[in-house]
Image (cartoon, rainbow, N blue to C red; front, side, top):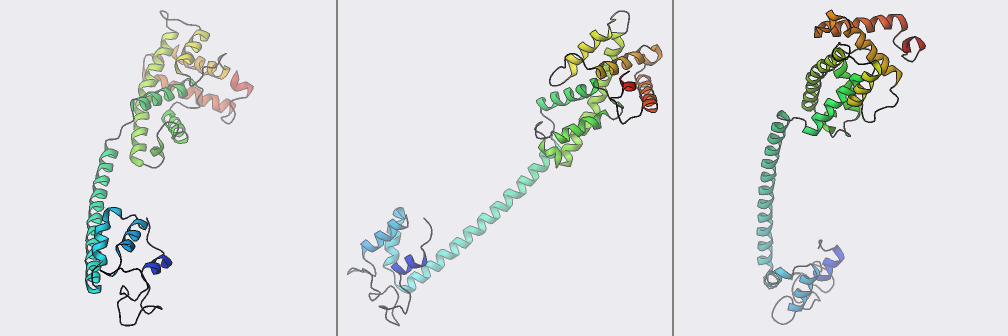
Length: 277
């Protein structure tokens, strides 16, 4: 229970100088109007009532012992108890300070060794593939494109700390950059295979296969025209044997073609008839 209010306190301990208390006598003396009994300052019933009211049943004997003390003994007892409480508080403060230091150290160690979970790794890779199969103005900034999506959907990806923790952001961005290189390489190989004699596929067949593999979360049907056009351009670059044999030359040639398209049709609106053609 909480501490007594002032009125409740006065019910048990009238202030010195109050009516019914003689000046010069102790406030717990036999003149304060309370039920004292014959053997001490307070009757056992009064002490028991106070113990029950304050929820001190387990400490009732201590309260009885305190009730029969003289005023100097009471003051000394309370002062000693206050000192003990101050020592206990200092010990708790020191313990909390040590815990805080250890938690800070563990937090730094966790940050330094943080890695995305297996589920997050799989989802981040899938996002790279998703954006790779969609039309892009440039493939050079694919990691930044995915990182912008991660920033916008951080809570959904269970990467809320990506927004505020620089260590986690650098880790995720580095992972995206490394995985983009690998996924783009595999993507290019599939494009090249689709126009090779041994694995030749029509554009429609290739588009369906690539969208089924990479598009998130729902596969569009029919395949949007802009995705088909983008895949057609990728296959056109792969048809050039010199470009398809070399990873770097392939993506460089693709970027040149995209820049040429922007010069012809502009980069602000990819929904125009010229872009769709």
